[in-house]
Length: 84
Image (cartoon, rainbow, N blue to C red):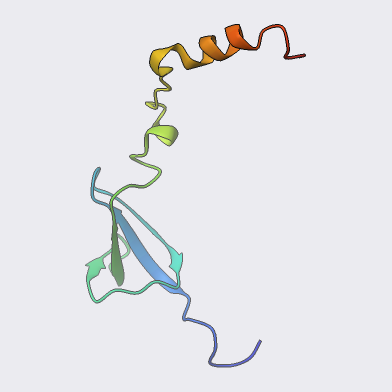
């Protein structure tokens, strides 16, 4: 690899603001804010609005809504012409 063209890849802490969940990982992101982690070291802190800990898809709380019966309306309209 060419020197001095890639961003620094360091350990950072991502904190989910909606659930107060935090995890340590590596990233090219940086921050002026720091947090003291469980191992006693300080790492840059990246605050995120949502993560896998609070996102409805990952928590199993996601609801799929069929507003106005669109799927049924589609099936009725194209029932004879759609081959499965």
